[in-house]
Image 1 (cartoon, rainbow over the protein chains, first blue to last red):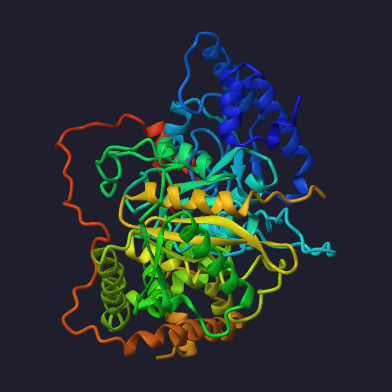
Image 2: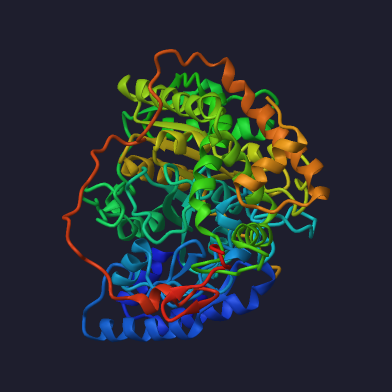
Length: 491
Length: 95
């Protein structure tokens, strides 16, 4: 029998349907792979008993000729998603041993459709980071290494555990979240596919909140088709999230393989940064040529406010985070550190419970929202955000159906390499991805090539609101041309 | 704009995060690095631009004004560090 962990999600689904193997065999193969790969630190909690119980139920459904679209498919869940009765921490000390008495809407829909939960995946604390180095459980290791080097690399962040696990064959797909690039950047760093849907497409209910106007859940998977399959189960209207959109969920898989002939694709000139590595530039040109060969029309476009997206993000996101994270006060859940009075208890609890990056962002957020600074910072940033969104709207109004850009300004870097004193250096990782969050638009990262040292590089496609399907069609063209990217097993 | 040491202490207090004196200089540098980075927004002309309130146009949904959940006090206090009979316990606030 072939190694069940090297299948794509679609192949595993078809193999289960054809009774080539059972759901319990598929789950056991993944649990064994997880055990062998603990050095990657992708999982912060393995749930083998629950996984086997869910797999046995899936097999029972297959026996009766039943089962949803994900029946028996083993998945990993980012530790930002509340899972009923199973520890959920957002990889922060402050949540201690929190066991949610409820299930997030997105994960409940995966289980509704028959999926199996293998465990909880590592992430940057409260999803704040681009390297998965801020987790209370320690950094995640990228299964990719530079040629001829055994230096440990980051998988990107914040969904680093999700990306690492999918790339290393420790699950067939994973949930992730994206506030400024947290699905697409780690996907690009690990040779996987990451889809951030339109704001409102997936319910945020039961997902630990970071910046509510930017956060969106989406899948990380090994292929574009796999991402499409997961997307259909994750999306949908939820009355418990007022920003979730009441709109029919398409069968995204049908968009995979659809012709892109005649599609107008924009290449934004503002993404051509000074000092951009030549190999990123080449990758971008190559991607444009592939789409052209498939019949798409490539046009240069302008998104004039691009350079302001990242600075505006570093006002809006911390502001919303400072408000969302006010709930961690040592009273209702999580770890408490005592003090002489109530305020001191709050201050001690939060000083000990939050890591350095989270503290820094809460403080920036508190400052930009404080009396006398609100107009100069927060209000101005929200106005700039309107302008960023308008840039895209103008483009789409002119007939452009999607925009092609690099996903990241570089390949994966080493653990500890960007731990310098200047936080901005790390923030620059999200320079190509953050615009889609600011404008609420869908974006997909697809592996497209390798750098000179053999590390995967990704391209990004940004789409029109609720037009994830076009991104999947275009993404598959790139995937077909570039091929699949699988790391050599060294762990 | 930049922050001084006193402002760092004040922000820490507003954010309810205890900051030791030894942490102040590093925090001050980090916050100022971020503030210097976002300073470039000042060069954008935002005259007459509406601040964004909703990234996707949507009307506020309203739910029926009915009780649809409740009776789960056990679940609500289950994760609390200190409780007594379905109450959260905090240090004494009223003398």
